[in-house]
Length: 254
Ligand SMILES: [Zn+2]
Image 1 (tube, rainbow, N blue to C red):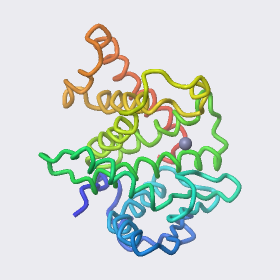
Image 2: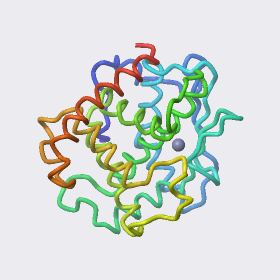
Image 3: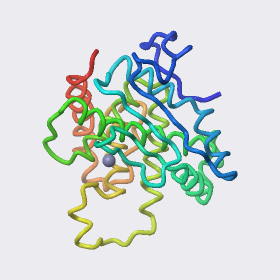
Image 4: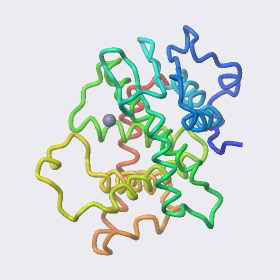
């Protein structure tokens, strides 16, 4: 059974019999034809039920004015195309994520399989792309990097509204760390002007929000950072989680 369960705050009837293409839902999910190899990954996505989860969250918190399409099996992505109001996610995204986690013998000693970790990373990515779509759909002003705002959206949704969302976000964060493992200490100058923060920054930003959401549960989560910074960062993260949650909630239906 998938460990991602909606918090009780969402009535269970929203999850049962949800029609992904219903008028009310305004969110449709399509799967492009998959190769024999990709069929397995298509199956993982379907069985994870993350689309139903996101669907229920959208009905409760982030309602779309214009129908949003989510398309799996696209060539490019993950990305949000504002022209067609469509999110594209290639099958290769989940393939590559599973590979990353397997190569790093992901949490072999724990219950989380590489497959579950990849599903968690996919959920984070899906919510990140939904943030771009929601920003466009509602004309939300962005005062800073939109990419960071989208990461924050994904994080606070997972931490506030999804059971075990903290575990899932930590797995998604680990993928950022794994992706930056073989990077040099210094980047190309052009990368400093990229719209995304560096993967390692995205990793620590996620950790910061997880810590800030429940500091008593995660006293050692920020121990990777130098001791001199730790006290300041810990109090910043607690406040940051509250500010980001409150500000995004200002644009939610509830
Ligand atoms: Zn983005």
